[in-house]
Length: 507
Image (cartoon, rainbow, N blue to C red; front, side, top):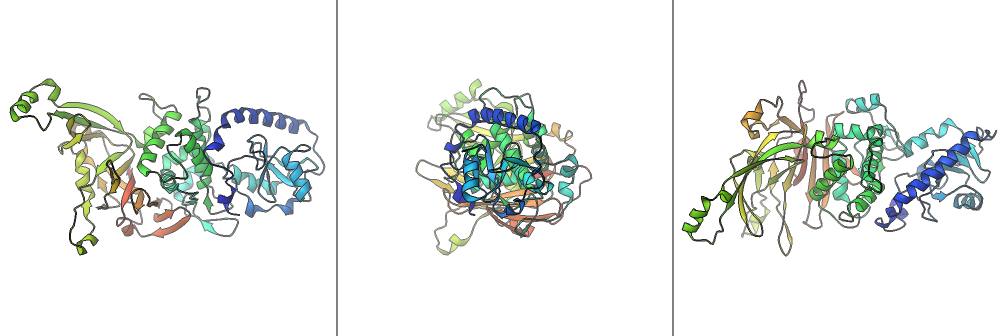
């Protein structure tokens, strides 16, 4: 069954009532659970004759848990014979009618994780069904989480294909590869991943009534657990529920049906996740602990270029035009590319300009000045780093927007995959506070093609094997490290090497 065909309606609409439904669903589930606790066990519960009718190859729990007929979120059951979702199990309910009409008898309540036989309406108790509940709701122990990066064991999906947990393709529902690449990159940042694999880490966070942003946290956690599930039925995952939460929480700024920008999405997502976890200027969250650094920004206002020289000279003595310094946190560093040369010769157009990573990093050496123009004023700015985070994100500025269209700079950045030392970009008095300043690449997002269309793919390092993989939607292939540097890198995640860590393998 093609998962895309199960999209019943526009993804934007499907979560509008979710907040009200959640409370009702929990109430219904609580009543159900109470009844099932006090029900005497039916002798058929442990000897259901229909277990062999279950078809695991059609089961797909990556989609929104709503009835395929009433489109309600409340009290939804999955038919384990055909994979469709239906509401209720009482007489005349959609699940009941389906079981009578099609002789499909085994159902799973998607909220309570209990199995039932319909239309007879008794609970099924059988340990052979545990693999189904695990796919619906994977869980990880602390021991399993701590071993994730030490193993290189392939998992076998139900259809026989093998996959490496964590290196898993994501469906491109229509035009969401920009989000897929960012989500795959973040799922391979170990401390962030580990935090979200364990729901207890964030379950107790209190949010104001009606706050929908916490949905992002829940869905991101669910997606992490699916991507790293070693017992999945298929070798890929659909980010459908995660992306619906993105559409809703971003008020449709980011969509599934329209190509978006990877850097815009990354910036919004990290900030939204941080604030949904209760992050403030003073209160840190896992997001700021992993990615947040600090810099000094020196800024100097410039007189208007059209003014006469004497007037400019006079203005430069004013307080307003003196250099000011402020300290500011950052989640990622934007690296500017030199303007791509315009070739007139037909043949020379095949030459793609190249620039070393350290040339564009010079923006943060505290000396290099750059002019920034606003609508009314011009400023000269220089930047210097004062705190380096454990994981450093670079966003390479490939796109410039003017009034008419978006232009893309195809310049290739030459970068080493390991051993990038950033000590020289730290202000001198902060260098002693940083014992380690050497970084190794762990994720590289690439944009191919035209600015507004184009497609995204990602290179990720699998820590357990030390090998690099390329993921583009559902396609997963291994790749040689030296091939990574030939691409139009757009977003990169670098890991700081800590004491005693060796150079990563495979590079």
